[in-house]
Length: 116
Image 1: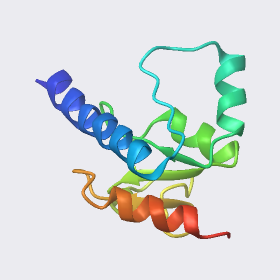
Image 2: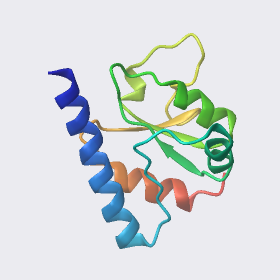
Image 3: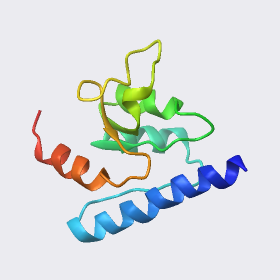
């Protein structure tokens, strides 16, 4: 069912990010419950990279919020999306990763290395 597929996709991301945090000493914040808007917006303004898994579709309102707050959006298969707002343009407005997260570490390491 759809919930199981979403849970698997997101669950693998959580496990992967926790491993990267430990390996690289990165500060990673993973939230599974809704937080107060003021707290969320404060956290978002401090975010460098916003890794956004799929939900019931590829698009998420959080993608737009992350971009507007100045974070770099990291999205699986972003190159395949078309959106009325040009937010899914890999290398320009976001970073593209594989849906199985197998290249996520490489993409994040490179992004954190780049100063621009």
